[in-house]
Amino acid sequence: MTNKLWDKGFEPDRAIEAYTVGRDRELDLRLARYDVEGSLAHIAMLEKIGLLTRDELTTLTAGLQAIAGEIAAGRFEIEPDTEDIHSQVELLLTRRLGDVGKKIHSGRSRNDQVLVDLKLFLRDELRQTADDVQTLFDRLQELSERHKEVLMPGYTHLQIAMPSSFGLWFGAYAETLVDDMRLLAAAWHIANQNPLGSAAGYGSSFPLDRRMTTQLLGFEELHYNVVAAQMSRGKSERAAATALAAVAATVGRLAMDVCLMMSQNFGFVSLPDELTTGSSIMPHKKNPDVFEIMRGRCNRLQSVPNEIALLTANLPAGYHRDLQLLKEILFPAFDELRGTLGMCDFMLAHLRVNDRILDDPKYDYLFTVEDVNRLVLQGVPFREAYRRVGLAVQHREYRPTREVHHTHEGSIGNLCTEEIRRKMERVRAEFA
Ligand code: ARG
Image (cartoon, rainbow, N blue to C red; front, side, top):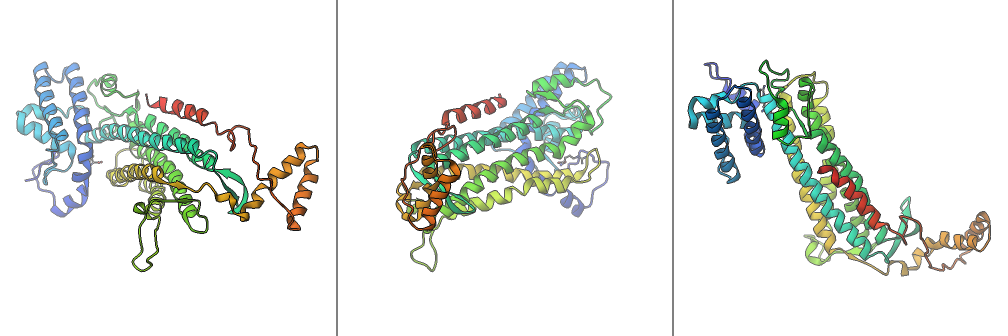
């Protein structure tokens, strides 16, 4: 006997059932608490519009709260014969409370039920990801200030170019995360709209009070048009994935920089031995595997928006079962990115910075522009100053003065750490 909400007296083929349920029994567990939250709001609304009595509401509310307790305690499972979280919750209520359990599904469908679960889930996950991004941002800003006097080469074309600093390098990744935070906030606003009441995708003939559930579930807005609400399945996930991919792009690039800077050919940074890994054949090896795995994970994460785009490509308006597969694409992406953010913060806390990099004469040419500018300040026209320094380099007579005076906003001598911190605060305030 299967526990189908849509049981009509015949047994579906076992192989068909296994294929269509797929990984839902496992993945839906992450939606369980939100499913109960959505149902609590839905039944409060059903009572208000007269589809449940006061007593029925009290009974059902207690039943749902008991299930919420079991979920929180880790004592909840989706039974092997039950399709998904929505069926499991209704099954438990009916088993425990009798016929009143069968009343909670009036005026909704699993299509808007899963939508509401996902919106609540996305809201939470995006906020937690934002917290992790903030932690990394704070770390980068702290390191930027701590090492602001430590110079390193700046490159263009991967050829040494002009003086840079660890203050600039750490600070650059911090400010880049502000832009990524904006995308997280945008995805959060997109998720923060109530789809409940759209039912199967075309609404209901019951006079549902959608404003009431919007308020009960703490959504910013209603997704008014029921077809738009249904079409937001896939779109909200895609917005979230785009934001995750943006963060991943930033972190992946940082990881690449560290790998390069840790190579003996650079020697700009190092790690304590216990944070490196060895080789099975080369006894001297201390490799930056953590940053390589980080780079690889971040690169993979950038394919997630594409996977979602392809999965949902050319789907007409309305519900399609394909949408179920979004869960297995997006859920692990949150875990991977959050694990990576935590690891990146941990590793950076232990990163050692070489503060004598520029002592090596191979970096002398970094200072040519400084010396051109010094001549300009003494009244020599720029093109003439450029020529003089250029000729000195050409004739191997160039000796750098090694003095760096950068004062404008965002330069070595004026990192604007505080301004960037305030910019981040303004973006974070969007999650209020
Ligand atoms: N597991 C389904 C999903 O994630 C739940 C909705 C099922 N709806 C349906 N009409 N079969 O999409």
